[in-house]
Image (spheres, rainbow, N blue to C red):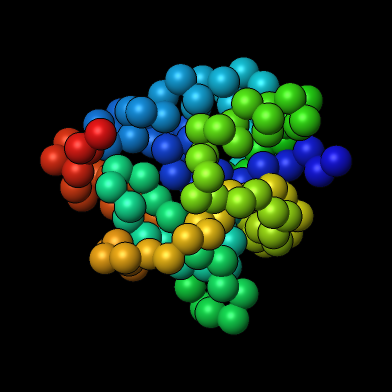
Length: 142
């Protein structure tokens, strides 16, 4: 099984400290205790704001990129089984090509949005933490 995981929202280590991302704090801690951060990078796709959390829509045919972090999991079966419920039924996990800032590429697990997006604004930068900094605590409604 692939041992790498790409996270782009509330599981990012740099999401800590943004009030809008605090629902992910226990899961960020679980990830950091069960995996090693490899580096920052991106994946092809577009990012949307669905309440306080982001939705990645995979789109290999676009130039748009979504920022995130690549992690190497020690026990991928166990960790992914724990994180799947946190991500929820509106996401599906699949392997995607991740490009690190160093230029290296890796295949990694990524959760992508699977249901129609109705009225969700696009995060043009593709960076959840940049968006979280811009909305402050007001976007956290759950």
